[in-house]
Length: 85
Image 1 (cartoon, rainbow, N blue to C red):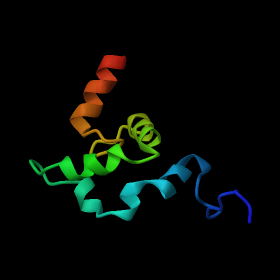
Image 2: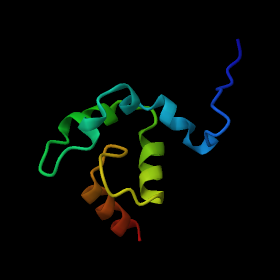
Image 3: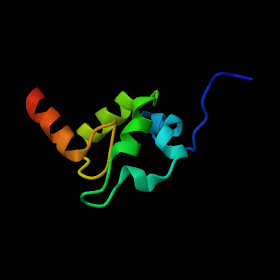
């Protein structure tokens, strides 16, 4: 048995982190709450996720406008992007 991860041929290697994301094992609706809905559950899952920073970097690089990514809401990501500009 090898330690090499195997992904489908059309699966970009830079997105391989998504296979290990805890959100992939939970209810996706928690990460895309309706306007005014709670983000608490999604953020709690993100706190213990090993690929949290990969997720956040992806969201920032791809200007994700909806949902919880890397433990941050769209508003929080926007604020973070402004601070680093």
